[in-house]
Image 1 (tube, rainbow, N blue to C red):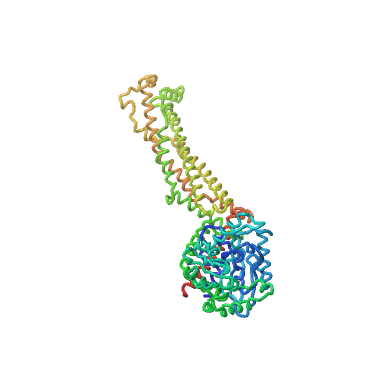
Image 2: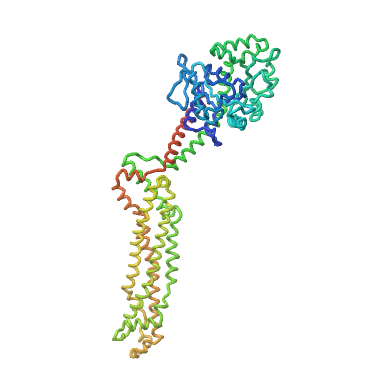
Length: 610
């Protein structure tokens, strides 16, 4: 039992140190899933005295009015017999308090540091751990006392503020409510019972404690309450007799106070039959045993929450990326690895694993053919232009059989218009490749992690694509120029000659410039140009793929890698500069993941040993 509660105490302390608790969050956390006991009662109900009796030490601030102005998370750790008692505050982790009067002062001082020297309250808890061989393993949360009226120096809202704070703790399903009520007041007016009933109407989570039994009017007793007749809870009521103010003033120690408490219940006729389950010592043991039972019943739910949270934390850490090595070699390796992932994503787009590569084929299959089809040869092959070019090509000697030079000039002037669609196809593929670079960057989480590297990689990739575009454009235009500078002779040899068609070779040269003759020349040239267009429709895409797509897949970042090897460590570090918020987030998640994995291992061990 002690091991189980001690484990929960340990996890709660670790959760608190990491800020993994739910006081200010609506999200379920490991802290919320761990059972704890919240001490609830009205002002002057005897809450502080009950806690001190359970601990066996006089360590809480005292006074009139509202004394507890911040929640006090009190963790009791049972140490080995003979060891010295001491206390530790979470906000002073390296300081041990062996003087419990100093503990009381530090609680007061820490409260004042948060609220000022006023009667204001704060929901920020103080965390105190007490290690002693005389305590049971237990976690208690002492909450500010409920009140009905604001006193001088307090805002009118303090009544509701305290109630809201108390409610935020006790409405959690894993919270055990220790409701403190004074026996010398009507139970129907008990603040603790009233608020407990609202959040736990069946009394499944409520443990009732009756204080100030020894201060009841003569002729009255609390037997009906303690026996559950006046107000029944699922668990039996426990009566306690705390030290009086006179005892406190006389510094009566807890051992003597507990002995007098036992004697009171054993010697008072009305309570003698209940004496075995009355008193502070019984209350501490009962709370510890009850807490153990609740913890055992919650273990499956705790395990489920831990497993789910571990998966979420691992996913988030994976999204944030790994921390970078400190040495230059490690940084260079990290950059190269990130670039490799980016390059892989880029190639996957081209290879069809990811979307986008099909747009390149669309340029070849639709855009380029449509652009070639839209070419208008009317101006080049108009009757006037044909006659002009042939006449100019003939010079002072008219052609004898066929106007060969005229044909060449007509074909060249027509083919040169194909340069436009060729360049447009190169630019279209270039634009697609740039879009794929941006997509690959956005799909590489590691580049999001390092804005400086993301910019450099993006710029280097675009610069490489620009060089490839220039080379591709040069190659595509060379294909067009090749067709211009050397004509396919076989095409013209297959054409029928004038004589074979019945033409008269002695016909006047001026008759040869007749419209019918010129139109036949234009038709021949157009047929040849169409043949060349059909050839270029297939050869231009091959050139583009070779010069741009293939090269982008093979050497997109080669120049960047060359320059990277020349950089000094300072420049490498600049590339891997990370948003400080991301670094802080990763560190916090890593610590939290370590906590949850440790908790999982220890809780699993306890669960298997049951």
